[in-house]
Amino acid sequence: MKRIATLLLAAAFVFGTVAAGSAAEFKTTGQFDFGFQWTDNTGFQDAKKAGASEDDFDVRQRVRVQTVITASENVSGTLFFEIGETVWGQEGDNDNIGQGAGGALGTDGVNVETRRAYIDFTVPNTELKVRMGLQGLALPSAVAGNPVMDDDVAAIVASYAFNDMFSLTGFWARPADTNGGDAYDTVNLNRKNLNDEFDMAGLVLGVKGDGYTFDPYFSYAWIGKDVNGAADDLTAWWAGAAFELTMFDPIVFSADAIYGDTDGGDVEANDATGWFLTGKLSYKMDMFTPGVIAWYATGEDDDAADGSERLPVISPAGFAPTSFGFDGAAGILDGAILSATGTGTWGVALVAEDIQFIENVSHVVRVAYIKGTNDEKSFAKGMIEFGDLTEEDSAWEVNFDTNYQIYENLSAAIELGWVKLDLDESVWGAADDTDDAWKAGVNLTYSF
Image (cartoon, rainbow, N blue to C red; front, side, top):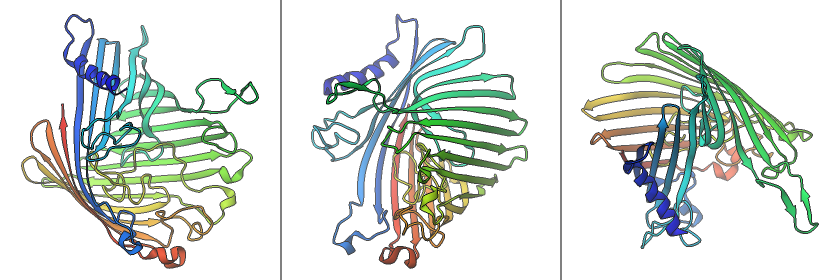
């Protein structure tokens, strides 16, 4: 198995360099990421008080290699492999098989992932472009990432540009098929009809004008009751839009709005309905770009029987208004100790971007205030868990992040972060005694 994985990765490199005699053109790009990170109290509970210990410092690396095989302007294929987040010194389980393995003495690990494998083609005699296979699929976002869906998935995506102003994209994706074929009951010796598929489809309208873009979208999902042990067949839908206004440059305004609803069938407690709104206003100046980011996402009420009031999500890459409390960290550095999606919170962040005093060195400073939107009784009723914020809880976050472009293909990101969490004693009891969280990290990236 180790030999096969090694040969696959080697083939990806060879395809990018040995193309003589082939009708296809090969182009390989990728990244080597190295992360050195020290963190403290990321769970906001001092382990020493509980008689435990913390592992504050680790080093990890990640390699991504993408090869595009182009036969003509109408047909191409893409392979994207990743050796994912190998932690230095970590053996991993099952003979170093799996993500993160292979970092211990000997450095042997079977940890190559197939991230993407798809083809692109144009339908003959039309302008309709199709992408089919394992690919990245993200719902539109203009501010800080879409909290509903941004991940790799098996899908078919078709897009058509009517003119320079209007385009339409449609997709069908299959995030899950638990059985992947006919299920066979070895006890009763018969076939079982399982509702074990998770299908998702959607439309995105692209509107691009003079000084603005507007991308409304709608997505619908069917989730079988046998997917992850759901109590009943579920359906869900999302409607949203991403908007950016640049006609008043250097003043730029962007916004995202999303509404989502899940129908839990006969079990009302499985229902979920919520919405999410975020916006950013920035003004580009000679020395830096000041701005403000604000968001609001609905939270749980005090009634568990009527379902959830938080926005239903599928698989977000991460809502990223900050680089420690939320998921805006560079490369493979950690973030999102408060929330990966932003659901159940509101917040305001003052941002100073593109600060530059030295050539090839830029800085970003963020100061954010975050508060929960979940009802204070929702924890006692089992609707949220520790780490979610209620209306009585809040947090402060400060980031100071630097990017140094060392060479054209080599850069270093340095991130310093601090989060102070304030929990209400009437909600959390003794768990309200929290300690501040700290982060200092360096991410070195070689891009080719």
